[in-house]
Length: 231
Picture 1: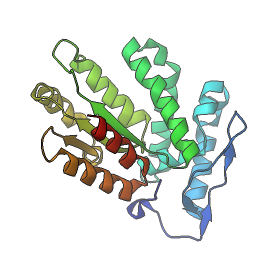
Picture 2 (picture 1 turned 90 degrees about the horizontal axis):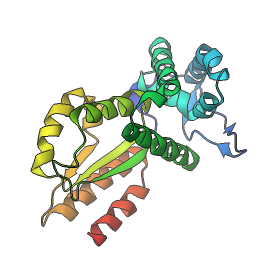
Picture 3 (picture 1 turned 60 degrees about the horizontal axis):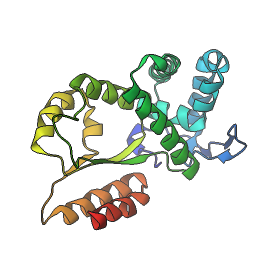
Picture 4 (picture 1 turned 180 degrees about the vertical axis):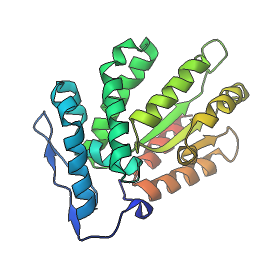
């Protein structure tokens, strides 16, 4: 994932964050260049949460170098705020068994996608929300939608590169109006609606091109082009 110049602290001599070995023996690379101050903050964040992480193998797997960098960036390199945010996520992960089946299903796939994104060196994801056959009968309760948004926003920071809402019906507009106030403004900019019609290909290509340019999500063009060609 590309660093955001606005989030960088005082300039220091640049250095690369070293790769770490995953529990599967594979080498993971953060894919970003950190200056000395940022590197120091990442190490301090590790120290702050180490007692909690070391007590649970699943948390050790979750907390790789990608994780620490993402949480620091999500809180503009404020160590205190990043520590609070990450500790909240670790506590949430330990208690995630209390969530309902739909949310556990979401978490399961987010974890798989997160590891694939980290392994690819991108760190971000492209989400395609296909609203084909969406109806009042199968729409999730508003409470579930708000909970999912909270999970994505608070426990998977800096993961979203682009979210495409494909052919969202008028029915969804009510849910969107209710959920939108809970979504961070920066995240809202990454959510694009592609409506059915003669301009959908043009709108899709424009959305993908912007996302790929800003976050390096080169695969999203191929993914959404395939979706358009098969629609």
